[in-house]
Image 1 (cartoon, rainbow over the protein chains, first blue to last red):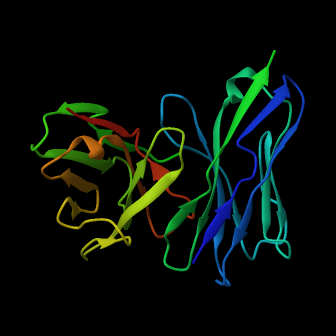
Image 2 (image 1 turned 90 degrees about the vertical axis):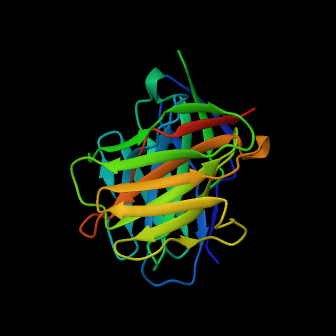
Length: 113
Length: 115
């Protein structure tokens, strides 16, 4: 069974600083995908970044980067230069061999001015 | 990014009635669509997966007869909550992906309240 663990229910960060949101996963699949989504209070899920299990380089998308450590089965999200609009729930997700997506419990990020 | 439209965004219905939620991929053909349920301040729980041309596959513990999923075309999937009860009140969200893309794109979600 696939399992995604996010151990930080809530995080605070000062505006303009960087923050790391933790995510670990457990799977026996050889091929899988790792994702981060942002969910504002309005409820929609916004795709942020993707990392394939065979990708050797860490994924980056603007201010978002994914710190992928395959041996440790971790896929932490790093947000640089935090903005007030970054305040939201963040979900780590994994797509397995059957193309199903599994989500972690989420981390609520609050950016302080 | 690709656009997935979910309708309605919220609905209130009486106990015992059925409610249909639509999920459309507007600018791509979705080979796979997913339906999730999310309780307040909790994660998304996968309910079912429907692939192009085949019946939906339900996750363990999800009642097939209660949550009817129809992947009518490559751009439309519907979730019908039959004989709704107050415990079915929740946030339902769909997502869709196509073969050539890694990520799934989500609809805006539907907040269902059964009174």
